[in-house]
Length: 187
Length: 130
Image (cartoon, rainbow over all chains, first blue to last red):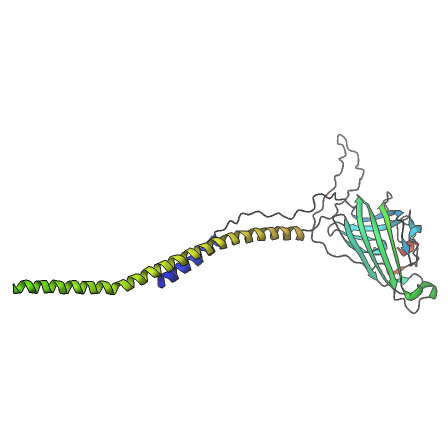
């Protein structure tokens, strides 16, 4: 009986020993990124980007005049260390991380209409897609809601909420300045 | 004569005793043989289990390696845009040509979110809105 037990234990220990002596030199892939993608670059710091085109089919429920801005410029900041972008004045069109030529920029704030005390809730979600060095398309969805009681009736959209959706093509302005009216925060 | 009969009697008695002893050991021998047969069968079964376990182990190792590779690929940070170097005119130096700056690839670090609240005030529409 004792011999049987010893034999059984020996057989059970064998797989464990095989496991201990297993080959540990197997190499693993090191997580390389998509090799097929041509990655584009952005200039670091603050730069002006000109709106060169607006895609057809835009919707401007908030009456922002998005189609009238073709040819004008907006500031953009790119921080290379964190790969983050802020598009528009103080990130008015959102901020976010860019990777693999694309990123989602987000804004969520409560601005006040200039010259008034009318505050409202504004969100922007912008999908940015680099198409070349310092060139990209950005598809923006902006929603305005929760207008304050001090807002004039003309400033409040029908139903209290509005949404604008559009796609701009933007490329870095050759004018390397943030001075208005080409790019600064005040035209 | 009497002595010969005694000797024959003793031999017969001894033979009987030996035979009786042999008869007593036979069941133990049979039992040992049966035990050996059973143990051999058990050993063969365990050997088969060991072979099956080893092949299962090899399969599992391959699966682990595959999953680790996929995990490494999934958690690797996506490449961020490189910085496009601005062309800056260099001051002219005698006997030295200005070198063209090369685009510098930035390391792809773990990236934080960068949502903004936007400007505090803005126009209802137009350029001042953005």
